[in-house]
Structure formats: C-alpha cells, structure tokens
Length: 531
View 1 (cartoon, rainbow, N blue to C red):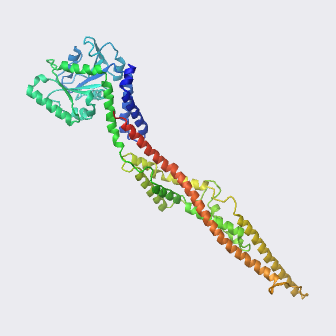
View 2 (view 1 turned 120 degrees about the vertical axis):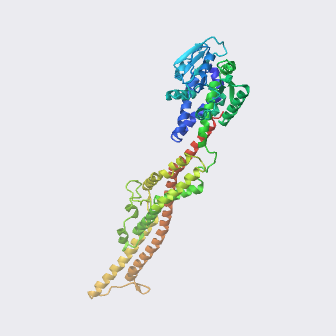
View 3 (view 1 turned 180 degrees about the vertical axis):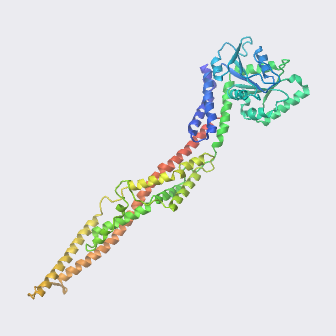
C-alpha cells in the first residue's frame, strides 16, 4: 500500500511540499483568513493520506426531501437511515462500510458515530465508506454545520437533488459554486425521476446542467435515479464502484483542494518584474539623504575647523597663539573624535531632513513593490519608511563611534612650529639687545660697538625680521592648513557616507531584497500548487 501511495501521490506530495513552503513564507505576511484554510488543508491532507487509499469516503448530501436517505438505503440494501418527507430526519451522519478492511480509524477521524458494515455486495464496492449526511437546508444549525464539516473532507461528494429544488440558492451559493474546481470528485444525482415524463425529465436535466455550468462547472456528471422504482440506482452504484476500484478519489479530492488554495493565494503573486531594491540612482539618493540627516555635513565641518585650530596652535605666531586656545575644539564640544558612541552632541535631523528621508524611502518602497499586490507594498514600507527613526538613530550611533581625530598631526606642523620658535627667539634676542643699548645710553655709558647689515643695526634687524617672518610663516601656514582641512573634510565625509551606506545596506536594502526574494519564492511555491 505504501508503494501505491508513493507512486500515486508523487506529484501530490510535491504540491503539498509547495503548500508547506507557502505557509512558511506567508506566515506573518499574508492575511490570516487566507492562511488558515491553507494550513487546515495541509493538516487535513497529511491525516487523510496516513489512512491510506484502501477506503474511499463517499458522501450523499442533499436538501430535505431530496431522497438521499432512500438512495443510501438502496445502495446499502438495508434500512439504515430513516426516510422523511417533510422534515429533516438525519441529524447525524450515518456510515456504511463495505469489505473486510477496517475503516474505524478513518471514521474516528471523520467523527462519524453511527456505522454499519455490508458484506453482501461482492468485491466491486470493497473499500467504500458511504456517508448519509444531514440535510444541508435543515432548520437545525448543528445539522448544517455537520454538513459543512464533512463536505470539506470526504473523497467523493454526491449531491442528491429533486426536480423541484435543484436550483435552490443555498445549495449553489454555499456549496456548488465555491467547489466548482472539485468537479472531478462531485456527482449530481437527479432523484425522483419517476415523477417526470420523458420530455420534462430531458428539460429538467438540461436546465440543471445549465445552472451547474453557470456555477463554473465545465462538464458536470449528472445521473438520473428513482429510489422508489430503483431506476438508475445501479448506474449510480456502478459509478461509485468505478471510483472505489480506482482508489484515486482521495488524491483527486486533495488535488482539487490544492487548486482551490492556489486560486485563493494567486492574487498575492503579481506577475510583474519590479526594479529590485532600488536602482543605483535611487540608492544614492537614499544614502545621501540618510548621511545628511545623520549630520555628516555638520561633523565634517567640525573636523575641518578642528584641523585648522590644531594647525593654528602648532604653527601660528607664538604671540597670538593664545587666541586660538580661547576657542574650544569643535570635536570636543560635540563629544566626537574619541570613537565612543555615547554622549554625542550631533544635532538632530531637521524637519526638512526628516521629510527628505521619508520622501526617498517612500520612493524606494514604491520602486521595489512596483505593481505588486498587497500585502507587499505594505511590507516594503515596513522595512523602509516605518523604520526611519530607528535607522537615523543607528546612523547617529555610527557617527559617534567613528574615530574622527587624526592619529597624529602632520609632520609639517612640527617643522613650522620649531621654525616659529626660532623666529620668535631671534625677535626676542633683538629686543633684548635694543633694550640693553637703551639702558647703556640712559646711563651715559660709552656706546658699545653696533653691527649693521646694509646700514640696519643687527638688533633691529633681528627684532623686525624675526617678528615679520613669524607673521608671514603664520599666514602661509594658515593657507596650507585650510587646504589640509578641506582634504580632511572630504575624507571624513566619505568615511561617514560609507558608514551610512553600510547601515542603509544592512537595515534597508538587504531587508528589502529579502522581502522581494520571499515574494519570488512564495510565488514559485504557489505556482507549484498546480498539477
């Protein structure tokens, strides 16, 4: 039997595997009202296949007075079901089992308490489990619920109709039309045919076929019977015997269930190729907007000013260097440059920056979910726009954790610093020399010899030349430091933008691409539900 199951259900097993993949991928994404029937189907299929294919469950269903219990008794050859005319008399499902094989576990799963075994019909019906269901139009809610429950699980469904109520709206709206794809495991029996003449019977059958085709059935199987005269019962029995002998009804039923599941899930799989997680231009816009909102420009300017301040302290004219010390270091004021993400004072993103980030993230989500059906546009927004605040917070932490201060000052700072010391020393020596000459003159002492350079006294040359040269070196150093500050600004801006790109990749593009991949995988799995 296991060999038969493997051979007969290889395609079905692949489809059930696809359904399991759909449930895994759609969990938390697709609406629960669509996931619940698919989940129930997978559970039901596994349980039904565990019971094997030796038994075929056939259910007789119909309205009050349609004669299904009479048909049941005619097939079973015994008065197992009570026959009624005006009121529903079948309150619970009855079961009749043909053959020696036990169907107790299967009937326990079906929750059918009333059972009977028939051993007098020969081998043609061996393995048949025939159910007589309550009336689907019963005034008792419990009866209708019992019909709904068993209609969902039986292998072959036989609708017993009478000439007066075959077009009943409850039957077609509640059962036939929703189960149009189960045509292969559904039979329609027009009972009480003895009440109609030949022309009336032909017209009634043609109209029933028209109604069923309007319900979506392409070629419904219609049999004519009369439980009173026995006419057509043998044909119905032969049709059921054929299905039982083939042992395919359970597989066909599950196959039809999978087709219904595919039809319910297919609308979530739009056959449209989006642009993935954004084209390069859109990605650049996202990274630029995030970097700007994270304060990249403010931090880069602070680094440039800090570099110029450090240059002024190291290479500025010593007499005015104290002015640079008055101004605080921009990086220290913002608690940056230490490589610690705590207690940074980077300004929060402005409303305009927030709006720009929202704009580019919305554009990214729309591009990624281009023409996709719900819930994918909402899922794309959930990993982009809805995570905006968290993304910006992560960017601010990344800025705080970035080491912005240089490992050491440029070497020319040291060289120019020593040159400034030398020049200020020469100026100081000239000033002291002139002071000494002034004191000698004030004391009317003999004038010491004074050396000149091109008629300029040496002490004067030292004072003026040292001071003037120091100022010139200071101005040149300031210009060179500005060039270095611009270079530092660009370098830090690039570093921070790279960090913004990495965070955008980890927190936006990768999750977005992951959702798109889930969409592709889920749609592939849904397509795998087809035969």
